[in-house]
Amino acid sequence: MGTLKVHLIFYFLIFTAIFYIITGCSKESFNPLIISEKNPRYFTDNRGKAVYLTGSHTWNNLVDMNPLSQPEPFDYVSYIDFLKSYNHNFFRLWKWDLLIVNGENGNDQQIHYVDLHPWPRVGPGQALDGMLKFDLTQFNQEYFDRLRNRVELAAKENIYVAVMLFEGWGLQFIDGAYRNHPFHPLNNINGIELDTAQNASGFAIYELINKKVTLLQEQYVQKVIKTVGHLDNVLYEISNENHSSSTEWQYHIIKYIKELENKTGKSHPVGMTFQYKGGSNHDLFNSPADWISPNQEGGYRDDPPHSTRGKVIISDTDHLWGIGGNRQWVWKSFLRGLNPIFMDPYYHRLFEKQHSPDWEDIRKSLGYTRLFAEKMDLIDMVPDRVSSSSGYCLSKKGKEYLIYFPQANEEIMEVDLSMEKGSFNMEWFNPATGKYQTGISVKGGEKIRLKSPFNSKDAVVYIKLI
Image 1: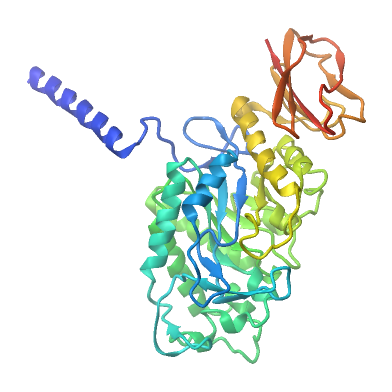
Image 2 (image 1 turned 90 degrees about the vertical axis):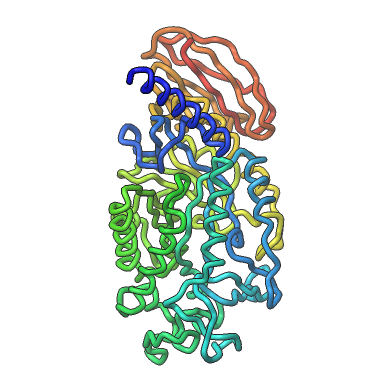
């Protein structure tokens, strides 16, 4: 029996090795993200490291959107390569609820047709756009296959994905939006009984007014979880910029996801992003969400605060500017313990036809900050306003410091090591070029004055105990 046991163990090990070779899996696999108890500014996995999330997202990375009645497919593989080229590891996977997105009031000046949708168009009868009506009790498997495939491809590249479940901005700000929503009574066969006379805007779709609507939404959410809930790189986002009265509905959907996932034994972070117009960051912090994306209240655009109140903050240019930002914002956000991401026009392929040199700067800066996040012992580092004259510092006291000087060519740069012992190595980084330069070693026990070796406006310095 002893020999047989040894043989069984041997063959099990051989089988396990072959499995990992064939599937490309690593023995050091990790679990879905959870908020770190040690440093709740960040997510972590079962390897005990902080997972800093940063990256670019664009509007049509899930559904196809083009000014054609049959939208051209989005090149998702090229998009993933684009993210990898900038060292990004996170994006929002956009959901559009409307059938047509009218950009005529913006810079785009075009009408975009949206495809695919979660529900099939099987009739009987025609919807308001002349095509078959939706059946909201069935699912369009092609949509969910695409969803799963795109999240899986991101997982292979170690990229995390926030799966957006609903989209609320379009219903508020696009002309004729409600008539182009699958839940409009004339666009489906399900008799959901939204009173178009009393609710011409359709806002009640994203409120807890109609139980039949809420049930259909819960069934859809359940289908999404069945589709991607087995994957470790998933986060959920309830809705992009829904109206302010959607708060209780969003809280309900957050709790519903958590209840469903508690039954499966595999939970993923659930996020709530800023409600525009009329929303409040207070409602985000008071929500049952694990992560939030605030608006500019409290300085998130110019001088980001560092308090998390138990939630991971994914600071998104989408909710701060729409399309905007600069590299200074990226570094300030990172040094205050936030996870910055960029609403990316992606080379003018949709909506935004203007160009800003800041876009490329932002993309590169997001990747640069991630390099430092992985280089440092980030799980032990906290925002530190007092150790540097700039106030932008992540520090593990007595061990390592990462400091950003937004005005390095103008301000006096000081680092306070007066309470520290030992010698420290210093390394400079140029945020404008991505170039490193070794600095001098310094001793603890005093305040030190620094001079940037670069001609650029801003500078980063990394100081670590020898």
